[in-house]
Length: 210
Image: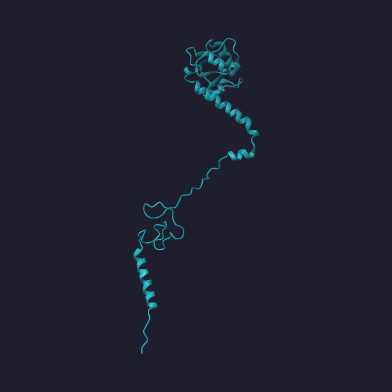
């Protein structure tokens, strides 16, 4: 089958093709790439460890794996990435490569996953438990309670700010029924008059008859 190989350099000679058997492995593919690659892509006598091959965002690092198990078929395109960055800089200018950033991101993720798997056994249970976020838990938010009077943002006065007639809470400035224009002001006045009338009746004195 025919395979296209594209170097991440983005140079004019970065795309070339090779022909290999259908039952080839990753090692066979690398060997064919070394033989067929132009000098601008790989120097003569390059070793397989000098570069990596990437297909569909996955690094082909298992040399014994068959290409058919990786869904590599006829006319597939493989990306060639250099491991030696100093050599890569000599062969091409990364700023001219349209795919270099995408491939480097793929390799960085692979290296990060490998490092994470290496460090996981040594991670303490306490640190692992601390890093886990418990779902469904929300932080409590406390809002400052303000005066019920329209367009007043002063805090409510404790105890003395409670209006027993309209059952709302007010600041020290609007705590009186007259100040906050209480809706039950009429009942308050009637209750006040009745209270004063009872007081006058109780304090009324009668002149003794002679």
